[in-house]
Structures are given as structure tokens and as C-alpha cells.
Length: 83
Image (cartoon, rainbow, N blue to C red; front, side):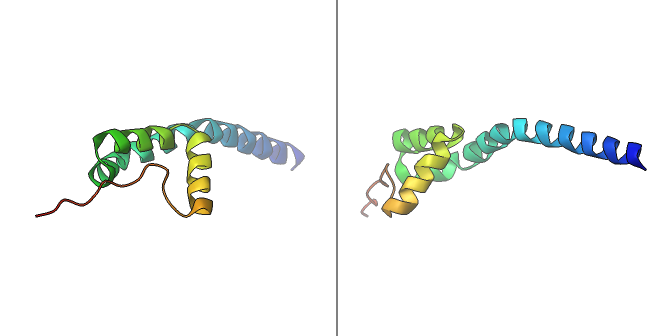
């Protein structure tokens, strides 16, 4: 029983290391997935800059946390179009 416990613990540690390395990759995919929404809401330059900041690991998390504390976006939305 002790050998199987060690093997399970070793396998779990290996899988968790692999997943931890892939987290930034998945964060970048999510940021790219929201690129269209950000560009429509903020305009091309601000939307691309917002998405780029969100795609960078730790920088995006810090930016989003600061925006929650601050209560508004750092890169403001563009003015609505008038008909």
C-alpha cells in the first residue's frame, strides 16, 4: 500500500506542476477571446492595449484588482456614437 501511495503522490505533484506551467497560456487565450468585445467597447487602440495588459501574467491580475478597488477602468470606454 505504501508504494501505491507514493506513486499517486508523485503523479499528483507532476500533474500539478504541468498545470501550473500552462495557466499563463490559458489566461492569454481568454484575453484574446475577449479582444473583440474590448475593441468594440473601447476602440481599436485602447481595446488592444487593455487586452495586451490582461494577457500578461500577474500584470493583468494586478490591473484588474486595481480597477476593482478604484471602481473604474484605467483605459476608459469610447464615447457612444451619436445618430
